[in-house]
Length: 302
Image (cartoon, rainbow, N blue to C red):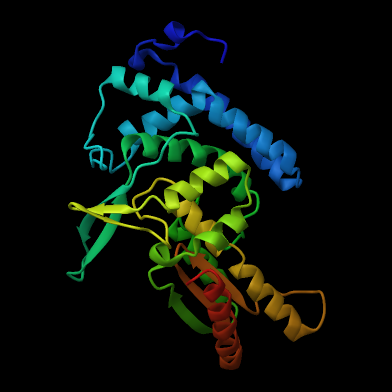
């Protein structure tokens, strides 16, 4: 970061993106490894380094102004697109201590004729969220459970289908097929923040996004629960909120077997975002697991 401002104001199109991606990937890999070995101090130090880095900021701005699907949707600031020069200005203004704006509510038609609300953050908040996600994601990827597939790098719906196939190909199973009602709207903020358990600046930032409120037409609504669908960081926050469901199933199966050896083929939970299945040999086990999961979700407001 010793570069002067004028050095950084290179032409946007001349930036060596490959080099920036390498810089960020190296830091993310170190965050992932530190998280794996439980070295929280190193995780926090590296996350702060990444969020201060020119590489991290530039890639975050590129993601929300060029790469993302919804890049042409404006937040409450009315900004839909940026010139290359304005992108550079945004990179230099990214500051994780700045004020957070309300999201703008946009209604998206669903296939069944209903409409789904999206909360679109401002361009600045989107870029800051992308930056926070670059730092948070590797920490949680080291901790996430093996059978969670939605909104995770390098994982797809096909992988979830494969996991289900592997679970049912040996023997017939009973299935609890479930989805979590209004998952993005109902997550309990305090429980989520406690679970994320991050450093103070990141904590304040995530709390500010969660509490930022929403503008629908000219009307402002407070947000006392949930994380806005449409926010760059929301899918990661939802995955953090739901982390631990699979462990619940493993603990239950252990209690049945009465020993330390857990056979994953007996009972398994496979989750894709807010949809999940529980597979078990007996219908009584399904009923008991449904009860356990319902209680567990209630703590998170779900």
